[in-house]
Image (cartoon, rainbow, N blue to C red; front, top):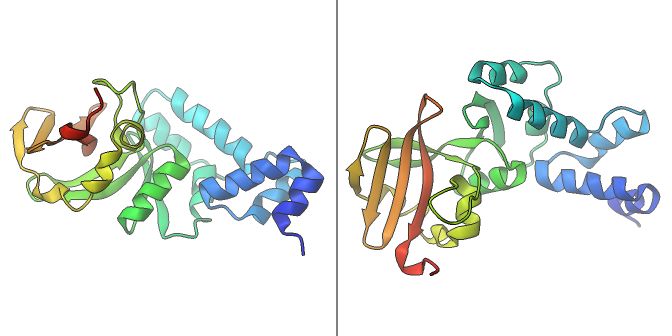
Length: 212
């Protein structure tokens, strides 16, 4: 018997592919996004693309939070469809705030949504809880931050996080940053983002595995 996706792909072409992608990225039940197309309404993916564009255009945290209170917010809709225990907890300086119950879900939600942050993703005895933003990969030099940078330029982080993070000593501290180091392992945690107090991971790496 053909699956729902097979039927969609056969009869709806690119629409079937788009719906399958949405199902994988947002954990949103495929049947719940088919109906809008059939009645001529914007799809969930269309709504999310529009919503993320408006978030990027917002100039202040207040404007971003205001967007999150709108009726029919697609980010809230997406959080209701996750199979894993991942929930939406409002708006922060990086965009949507996600909460996950374990490290695997932390990585999953950020890779699926490609925006926002997971609060309390890490914990350090001297720093406290530390958020992990999805961020931006940058160029592999002294730019970029968050999971998107780690996945591309420092994949060895998976051998460090989360288990070794609490044991990394603070090597230096400034007004807005902690530097962590133990041997070849180096990390950096910021204390704020765009003026909002928040501990968040910039990056972490093993210098012995850095590419020349």
